[in-house]
Image (cartoon, rainbow, N blue to C red):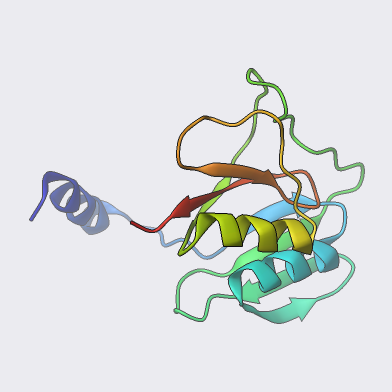
Length: 134
């Protein structure tokens, strides 16, 4: 067992909570759930003007999207911009996945890390990364 795997196993033995869901704040939960549903191929469990949930078909935690009045996107377009969180996704073909995400409504910021991770911005302004599965 690797050191990291052993550390994770130890943490699981001492933890007292399990991740129920990751919820992303946004202005339009229906639209953002549709974007990520298409990106990931996940089904919508619930969707209304206040909240939407996508089920993880692999049995992991679902993704939630909650309406926040006055929502403002996080800054990312500058190298020193701050962010609250971001999601990273593995993809088989980085160029193809980038094109598909852009067609769904993502945008590509000028600033990139310069690594193999491609940073895109979802329609609500959240950064997310696409990385080749290698």
